[in-house]
Amino acid sequence: MKMTTKLCNGIAQGVFALAAGLASTAVLAVNDLPGGPAVNQLDLHPPVTRIASDVHTLHYWIMMVCVVIFIAVFGVMFYSILRHRKSQGAKSANFHESVAVEIAWTIVPFVIVTAMGFAATKTVVAQKDTTNADLTIKATGYQWKWGYDYLKGDGAGISFLSTLDVSQRELSDAGTPQGDDYLLRVDNPLVVPVNQKVRIITTAADVIHAWMVPAFAVKQDAIPGFVRDTWFKAEKTGDFYGQCAELCGKEHAYMPIHVRVLSQEDYAKWVAGEKKKMAAKADDPNKVWTQPDLMARGEKVYTANCAVCHRPDGKGAGPIKPLDGSPKVLDADKLVQVKVLLNGQNNGAMPSWKQLSDTEIAAVVTYTKNNWGNHTGQVVQPSEVLAARQ
Figure 1: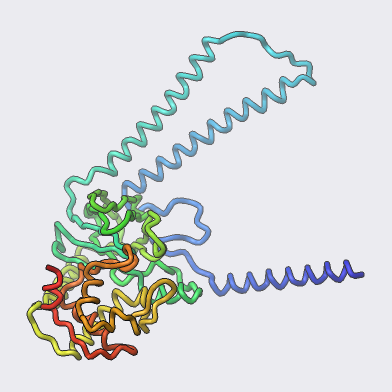
Figure 2: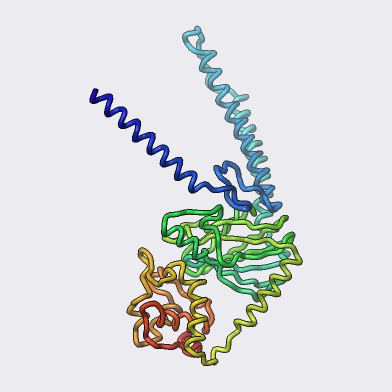
């Protein structure tokens, strides 16, 4: 009776656990993300570029060759084992060598490997041909975000950072993943025109990263001190997603890649809009700002760049130190915090933010020094940041 009771209790607990698991699965149910991962995806991403189509063809062709070889080799092996077993009275042949067999197992693999290598080489060579690009963009990997600089073509001069959307980090910290684009949504996607060859130059400011978008069949390492390049030519408009593909530190999972492919007309409108924004942000570093204006500007800079790690309330999370009550934020020497933003600290755990303008750094420092529980009354002017850079 005791054994029966224990067995029933165990079954009941198992049923409840299964029901809870199914319930949680229903709550966290997601759909396929166009341009990104699919639910229970088994195959490669649908190709969007000619190179990606070639990679798919190559993949399927080589897979079929491998399957044929597998069936042939194991078919002969199992046939030989079953047909020529001792219990059937079979006697093993006794010979020293066979010229025909030697030639066959040399020539046949050579032909197969040569054919596979020729097909693969054509695709690899095409992947590395970055000449005659219509648009050139530098992608710089940071811990943990991407910086994009448009160097050549329509949009030259545009520059921005692409960071994981703050709401996505909050969902991750809370352990409540939601949405089809969970941990793939960014504040500023990379925008490119359709049917134009885009050359991507990769490098990094700290450790090795990798710029990868599966739908384009593109993966290129971004290495500090080195410049590498790759290219793609998207043949359809839409949003396409990727991620950093090199283990680059504890926030590795939080630096997604979002590429938005627009029509030629929409891309031209986007470029015009971005250049207007750049003109509006082209601040004079010698301009003297009032504290309220710096605070307003600093809140926007903080939300776009800092809140992902330090949280909107400035309390930090896990190993990320809080800014609310931070000794360096409260230090009487304003340049202590300015130098942290310019140079980073803790071996890159706090990255350098030199890519921000003098006004943006002055604004965010002023904001953090006078927000939450910090009431220093200190104001940092852009001219002070400019002097600290030198």
